[in-house]
Amino acid sequence: MYSGAALAIAASIYFLLRLIDNDRGLFANLKQLFFHQKPSHVLLLPTRHQLTDRGYLTFSLLFTLCLSLALYTDYLPWLLLPLFFLIIPAHTLVSLLLTLPWWPSLTQQLTVGLATARDFPLWSQVVGGFSLQSLALIPVKFVIGRTSLDNNFIYALLLAPVLFSLAFLIFSSLRRLTRTRDRNQYITYFWLLTPVLIGTALSFKVSLLSYFRFLFILPAFYLILTTGLAAIKPKLAAKLFALILAVNLFTSAAYLFLPQFHRENWRGFSDYINARQATPAVTLIPSLAQASPYLFYQRQVPIADEIVFDPAAPPETVYLVRYVQEIFDPTDSLRLKLENLGYRRTDTRNFNGVVVWIYAYTGQIFAMNVF
Image (cartoon, rainbow, N blue to C red; front, top):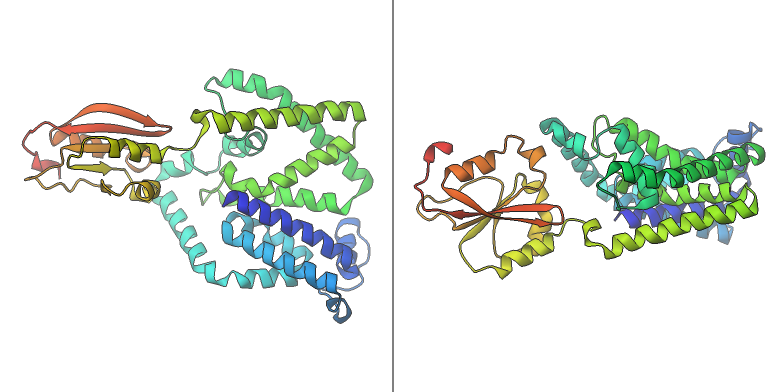
């Protein structure tokens, strides 16, 4: 859904620029906004004559549909609404109205996010809460994707020349902007910065400052780098372009072909369960809210977030999932209760971030006082 949001927002910006080119009233208001020139009228609304223009109607429809699609894919593209309302409020309002069926889901997501942040304070520290590290990861991950190194010193040493080059290109882009006052470049900067600034402010309350959620501003980031390349000498621009391209190709290949960079392997965990001898088993996880990928792949072994075993027929095998345990079970109560019931850990498996401890029942009489 994140790449879908990036595509839909990029298309929305493109059609927005075509609308601006097609509408003198809109362009005049933007000139007033950016260059302090007197606008031709106050409202950013098309006139009756402009509505009969086939191109204008086409771009209006495409902008409205693309923006609506972006808003449906994820809740973070909504952070761009202030920009769209400022430039083209009528079309933005129509797009917003088209998303009415999704508003209850959006409200539910925000409610759950606020409740999670309140009930599990460590959640915001691990996923999406405000921190300088979370903020810095947005541009860093835009460059290298999900690849990383365990040694932070070597990691920083390798990244330093790349980040320095990118900073130089952004500085060159800003210098070009002060000279040309290019309207499209202004919009690109607002596209990049508006969601980050609003998202940073909201991250003090809701856990949303995760770099992968901001993929919809990635095209703006590279457009700004492109304007920076256009503002420097051709030979230097060619070298920096080659560096950026090489980094993208290398890190993309590393992500695609090295399993350690892939996301949690829930399917591998399910295959491991299915391959074992069929014995009465259950899977325990600290929070069922994190069990959706398990439920997608696994149909044989049930999953729960609490111990409700039948003392007369306890399961012979328990798969204790340690995923996000430090957030939802900081006291490690599931493990303590399980071991107090007579279970002994026999194996440990790591499915690319999904750490699972396998327990076997030893036959010890249940210690009922653990409940």
